Length: 360
Image (cartoon, rainbow, N blue to C red):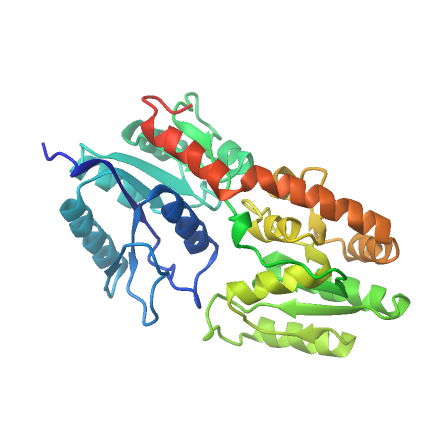
């Protein structure tokens, strides 16, 4: 049996679709970057034409097909022989790594709905995965409950919320802009149509206020202009809503730090809601959909509205825009809530999971 090279060595494996670079990183890559930096891990992921995040050892895998990516990851894991392997979003690869590297503790991290994920669609497959791995880690209790559907034994199934490094956030201005901001992917499930409709209804009654949309169909400067994106841009233009397109994550967070109100009106059940956490941490008054993991993240620190209800969203905009004290209260509650998700707090929990004989 091969022994790991160091009792403290850690490798974190990204999905093949995630770019580990500042200009292209999606939510999973940003989470992995924070946890890797906090716990001294190296990262394995797809080769990218842009430089990877500085300060974190990165093992780039070049590939032309998914199976070739998995093979490249396994070659690097065999060379590194880490004591701990954290594999994100890839159940089959996690099970294979656990079989081929029995001296390592392998954990599978899930950021999306597990019951429709390849390799986890049946209760039997989810149970088998739990038995073979050190732990299956879900980013919210909402996802954990979804994974547990149909299972009699959930030992090793745990929740670890996504982290946000509060020390790295931009400072907010003394006076925030009278702006209502949407920042996210321009896809139907994110509720962009509801944001546009709600803003169009509210703005004529809010002199001095504006609305802005930042985002693209996917992450990166080459995000495609899909028919849906074109339709939403036309609707936004007709309503007088500024259209920013895709912007790197640092620019997005700066925009949140200056906007008075940030909306996360998702129609689909968000697995976690990292944008909502970022909005709270930067001091914006948050309006979010009561769906998926969002209520779990937001708690009492934001206004929750029914998903798909543009009228309720518009009413929330009007209420907050007209009540500075209410915005101030939500901003303070949001900052306090965000401290529960600070990277050092979440990283310490992660280390305890790695070291536990039986994660619970």
